[in-house]
Structures are given as C-alpha cells and as structure tokens.
Length: 400
Image (cartoon, rainbow, N blue to C red; front, side):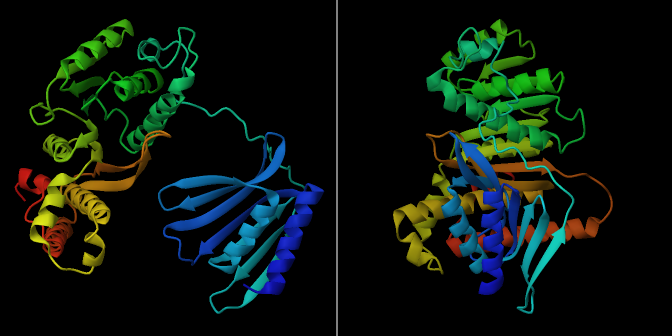
C-alpha cells in the first residue's frame, strides 16, 4: 500500500476522531496470511468512560470482537493495510474516503462527499438481548441458575451465558428448516438438563411450537431430578428417560442432539440421526480415541509424520480426521454440513460443533448426486489410507 496515500488516510482518520465526525472504518479484500479472515469493521465505543475503538474481525464462520485504545487501534489499522488488506473505507459525517490497491498494483484514493450523517452511539455497555430471559423460569431456579426473583447467581453467570449461546446457535439452524419441521427432539446424554430445558423453553415459549422433547441420560439420579424439574415447570411435553445412546429408539426424531458424547458414542448418535432421516443433527464430539488408536497402531509415514510423533499433535490430528470423516459421511447421506467452534463458557475449552442439515429430496440431478457420493467414498478411502486407519466406527455402523 502506498505510504503517501496511507498516511493521508490515517491523518484523516485521526482528525475525524478529534473532530467527532468519525462513524466507522472497514478493511476488506484481505490477501494476507491469517486463515479465514475476511474483513475488519471498526467503530468507536465508550468503556468505563474511556473512548476506544472496537474491532470486529470477521472470519469465515465467526466474528471476534476486541477493543483497543485509540493509539493501539491506529497502529493496528496501519499494520493491516501494510500486510494484507487491499481496501479501506473511512466513513465520516462529512465524506466517505476509499483507499484501494488495485490488482495491477496501482493505489487509488477516492473521496465521496455525503450529506450529513448521524454519529452512531458509542455506548458499549448495552444489555445483550437473551433468547432465554431469567425471570419467571422455575427450571432456572431449580437448577440453581437464578434465585426466586429471577436474578442470575454470580457463580452461575457463565452457565447462563452458555445456555443462551446454545439456544442462539440452534435458533439459527432451526430457521433454515421449513416452519413446523421440528416436532420431535432427542437430546442424547442430557446430563443435568440445563440445555435441554432451555431448548424446550425456546421452542414452546418463543416459537410457540408443540414439540416433544426427550432427554436421554444413563444416570438414573439425573433422570429423576430432571423429570421432577420438568413437572414443577409445567413442561408437559418434556421427559427424561434412562438409557444409552446406542440402545435408544430414535426412529421419529426430527432434531437429534448429542453434546460431549465420548469417543464412538458420537458416532452412535449420528448413526441414529441418519437412520431416522432426522432433518437436523447437531453433535459436539468429546475425545477421539478410536481413530487415534488406529493411527498409532499402523504408524503410516506421511507428510505430517514430523508432527504426529508428538502426542499432543497426534491427538489433535486424530480429532480433525475423526470429525472430518464424520462430516463427509453426513454429506454422503444427503446432509449439508457445517463445522465450527462452540465455546461452552469461559472456563471450558473450545469444542467443535458438527451440524448436518437434511437437503431436499428430488428426482433431478440423480447422476450428479450419484457421482458426488462416489467422490465422497473415494475421499474417505484416501483419508483412511493416508493416516493408516483400518476403519471409522461410524462408517462401520452404516456399512459403507
């Protein structure tokens, strides 16, 4: 990026912040080395009476927001424009300024005069809109998330945020399906039921659906506890049953969920969902021992052997391979797949969330679909050979 034009933009940015004419600045057309980064949006915020610039880093599947002092922000914007972003647009109340490096290397600077615009609010401490409100929720009180007045306990703030994040994710996925699709939900390995109750509450109280929800849990004491809470909450279409993922009959399920099912139990859950032709399958795998044992047993030499000789890298490789093949198998059975990070709360590590959304069945493009399925099988075969994997548990369950 031309030093002369960049300096002009930064000077104008500084002046707009001093003159209080600044609205926002966006950086785009990223060609740098940071994986999946697409765009940066910068706006002004007021945090504890101190003016800062809030950066929204837009990646392929997520947004990350970070706040910087004005001085830090100016430095960061300059660095990004020198190392990857090819276009910057500064919006002020007086004009929009565009700095762009074209494909031929030429740098252009344009200024578009605008009619007066309002400066956006810099209030950072707005209350986040939650899909699950804490007031008048007996299940939140029974589960020790809130007191009787609906105030979230200090030591339960993380759990409350986790509940809402979970519902927000499922809400966006459910909206991709035709209205009325979700009639039967099964939550495999429901535990103490925090997330199961919240989803039921959302489906019934927000979406006004008459969805049947079942939580499947191996521990009888947890089943009894949750059924008691459901009764106190008048959640008449919610029940918890004792059993395992492997043994549960999920034939009529529309939405199958399995969060943190250990090792091949995640495969059992996906298998149940595929067999039921569930419209939506959502799993967050936990530990990947089966594939790791396969890789360790066969010790195939490949391009990543210099990494996988270290236990921690082998573990991560096993995780990616296991979940990558799971996603391919879902695609083979006609699901559109998504894989992204799910952060449970501030004190737990990031989890991978694998989502399968059932595609429409139609008679068109049969040949293309058949070819795609053959291609997927070849990818699975090649992956197994590359890493020395004799079998993948989900593949064996489905007899691929």
